[in-house]
Image (cartoon, rainbow, N blue to C red; front, side, top):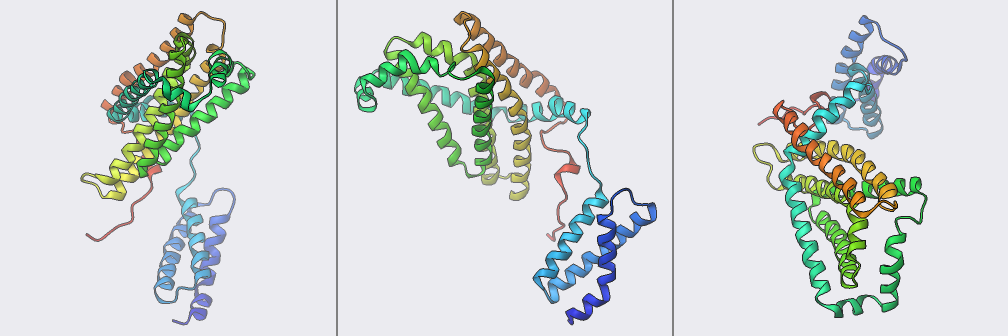
Length: 332
């Protein structure tokens, strides 16, 4: 194949496609038809060049041009109020409900492990002396633990907590396909809670610990467990894809997980506000814990009512077919 001659023969078509694809404003009906016709021709040209004379620069140039033309021909989408409403009434709750077994078991296992570690720490005082000095213990239980929730301005603290927890949840989902990193993240999180809780309990400050951790922790930790369960579901879809091809199963699980991650960011905003404004407030313990319980109960009710209804309507938690993209044809 004489590549120079081929380029000379077809470069006017490539230039015209580039012009139409890059033009601002709407195309006329005739120009739209021309765009589609040129797209098919240039795609054929690219295929021939790749097969017979794959010059890297030219292949990259034509590939980029075709991508731009495809976006132009498919149109662009704008986010509407209906999209947001549909997300929170169908996509997000349906994903939570359909994946409930994964995150409920994750939550149960972590709570049990946390209690076991905390009880083991309390019943073995020698461990405490090996990990932390008496001075540090006194500083933690009488000052640091409580002051942590009030040392920053409430607004900036809420933002700090929100971004930190959103990052941890995103990591659980992003690393889900690997499996083990999610378990390690959970273990690190549970160890911190269990050891501090065991330390406070051993020194007679369990009331302070639970009074400060429960208002925001019920919702916050549930979100982390949801993210971890969804992440592990991605890993399992890779191990056991079922009737689908492995890549298709992982893609479906991954898209659903991204929907969950987006929704959890909103839930974490609520827990961050509670942690910044309710946890350190002068309200009595019963009132602070009650607010946290109401928030947690509202989330669970949302999952098992709105989520169940959405699942019954056929919502899967995956993105729409238009957003999922196209599959390349394969020969069986």
